[in-house]
Length: 556
Image (tube, rainbow, N blue to C red):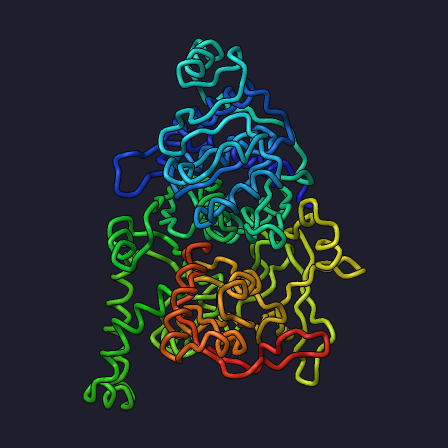
């Protein structure tokens, strides 16, 4: 365990706020709202007073759900530095999923975007003491006695009373907690029966932050464009936690991160490092590069030594400029990068690298700077932080990747069975990924032994959940959800032909019904889980002796 004072998660932020007091910390991109470290620390102090007034104790759960913004950051840091447990909820989750998570995690307070709250029935979250708006930190719902009022005026009065001489660096003193204690519960899914709350200790978050600091991925004055959802482990660890630990400046993107919005932000912010998912680079490659290099004159030149370097150099320069021109590297996570795109980017010496991790390791397992990257790998196991091994390798050395070390979770909240299944008898975490590890510790992922899919921004997608919904639709016997290369989801559906024949449906009518089924199912799913198309399949799917579908036999 990380045990030095400078490795304690809470002490890291005490130190950072004091040392970087006058530097800019967070900006809600596209607005004039920028907070310095001093202002962020003051807002955290006010939330601490709110917690105290609401009777929140160390270890109590506080949920936060909404788009990336400064109030989201404030809520997260205030909760952890108070000694409570933060429960970040992906804003894509549906109302029923959110209600389940809030109740399952036993949250006492909820900070949420106004629009999302409008779809939640307050009577279904009876244990919440109060709900506050992430838009402006106003009170939305209070079940507290009058003497425990937590409106802005009350908190401002308490703040003035607590700090009569003003709030200064010396007032940044947070709770004493060991890195062994629980920091957050991250739900990999919302749906009842499938949800698993990953219990992340402060040590796991601290390990990722310390790694970022020691490798100089983050440093005082670094600039990050945070477009990955902060409720997701990858964006949270590096665009937010590591950046603010170093004295960097995080620009928070609160809108859907289209390529147009991102390229504009990159040009204006000029980030020093970029965390991304493959889809962004793959789209840019297909739209900006592929049409250019497939033209006859260019494709011919690319086959001529020396001349090809001139063309490739111009493409590289154009790409570097598109991403702001001042970044050291782009780090891809959440899903594998298309092999063709990866090969071309390395051919032009574009600074891109790929890391590997999971929510259960908060998230990083392996990473290598782009200058040392090896093709088709996802970097080296983090020396000094993590260990990895291959379980039951086949003749080619492929087996399940298993890990242990500083970043590993404590288990799944209130789910002993799932926790037991996720760990080996000798204490290694089963990743559910198949791969190999070379002699230098580079990991090569070959596939998944789990069925989990990854959305365009690295969100976890569990096909069984979607299939369970599809299978309840009219004229559906069974279904199989698959993912295309562009991350879109397709459902193969074997119709209930007995019912179809009984109702004398034509092929055209059946297809119309299935499309209606698709629309109805999509209403129950998050945006990244949407079914793009339903394909009819004429036969029942082949199954194992345990009656599980042999997924590997089918393609989208």
